[in-house]
Length: 339
Figure: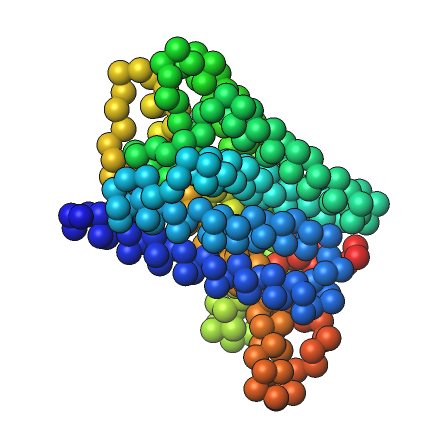
């Protein structure tokens, strides 16, 4: 194995370890915290972390073996099972992120009617659709024997073996990525841009009140006034930064792989081996980043983790069932206010 292969293998090992630990922490917080379990969004988060954890345990190690051995590491039946799971889990995670964005949109844009529009029952129905949608495509690919080891990506995934099936396989691939990646991306953009619009409106309202207060306080020290103005700027940027992370991480991690899979449908196009592995590792990196993007960096999850550590160390610095009064954003306030 050359140096590039070693570096790619090390990158995948790093992604695997981070993904395993971070997703386990999210599931641990869900089991430990009553408040997190009460939130409807917890259904989507636990489904997302569960799918990411399965992808980490069942798919990443075999891709790692494919990179190290530079050949198919598994038997035919096992390879088909792993490829089936990869197609299902990847699609399911995308739809789970779309469901999370819908939940946030309803919580922020329709805060007064959130409890009636998004109940546990509605969340379970959304997740049921996500599972059925995600299962349908790998079942079709398994029926047509389109699941096999693909050396370009060093993994068991969708793969065309017979040229006579190219037209049918092309239609299937385009429909699959359109109803998973593109559908989820459209939902993410629509919902989060609506959330950003509401957040900017609230920030503008707060800024007006702050400026009126500063005008009345004629004796205020210039340094205090400057701090208030800086806080206004940070508040305006905070919502934009979060929305950019939600959408940007989705596009950066999934986009290169999806585009590559679509480009390779052209008969005369050959995908570079190293680029194929890199694009595959990018999709895996989403499983490692999701826990931080959606959960672990929030104050509520941080407090739950601190409570768990304190309990392990037999310290009682924080009440285990207490709810964090500090909120991540004004949008989170809208979510908790309606529960």
